[in-house]
Amino acid sequence: MKLKLLLLSLFILLSACSSKEAPQLKIIANSWIGYSPLFYAKESGWLDEHNIKLSTVVSLGESMHIYQTNHMHAFTGTQYEYRQVLGQERSLMPIIMFNRSKGGDMVMSNHSLKALEESSATIDVYLEINSINHVVFKDFIKRNRLENKTFNYINNDQLRIVSELESLPKIKRPTIVVTYVPYNHKLKTLGFQTLGSTRNGLDLLVVDALYTNKENFAAHEDQFKALKTIVNRSLQALNNDPHEYYTKVKPYLENNSFEEFQSGLQDIEWLNHELSDALVKRLNQAQFPIRDLM
Image (tube, rainbow, N blue to C red; front, side):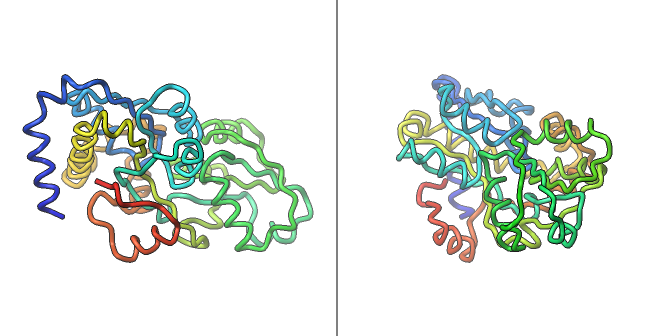
């Protein structure tokens, strides 16, 4: 694997000039700590060197929608978003892995699990309905046998969810928020506690990757290869100086503190190198293709 990465790096050095002259590669990503290597690369000017344009949005659903409607060449997302788009683009494929959620996706509530189980009231559920949030919530209610409860779904992106809950007086009715890092930190200050996550209470595989179709890959193959090396370079920068890295990516992560940023890093596992045999087996079971990964 090290030899493969060395060859990729050598390829990038030799093709840097031609990359600048290549047609612009347009990528869309949402504000998630697991995509921060892209944000760091953008702020460092590394993407410009290869004519790669990164656009950012708040929600996973919005990222997927913009990819489909605004002629983007690639988008980031979980395997859920991948399957959503795959229904319309049969040649869609993951090409760069970013991370696995190990606590980064969670279900929070202002009530305990026992209180939810005993409640007969309608439970408000805030989530991004057209994203992995929905899958996480379905797994949560199944594992905790809450299928008989009545839920009032409130669909919004994470930033608007937090803003709305901040604007309300102290919420007494049972409320659930399906969220992810870094929005959990603010929700905690509003009185919400984690009832289940991809680390504890949910046996749900959630991985993040960059997706494109075969046509876009063929047209921008050199730039995608450069991007793979750039992601590794960003993660090396994170390892060398976490605070400097945080300073550059902070504007993309809803202004969480350095301490919260470090805490969030504990909730993901980077997948930029060779995948473990156990994870490969799990991905195969989930019918997530890995043959085209760089």
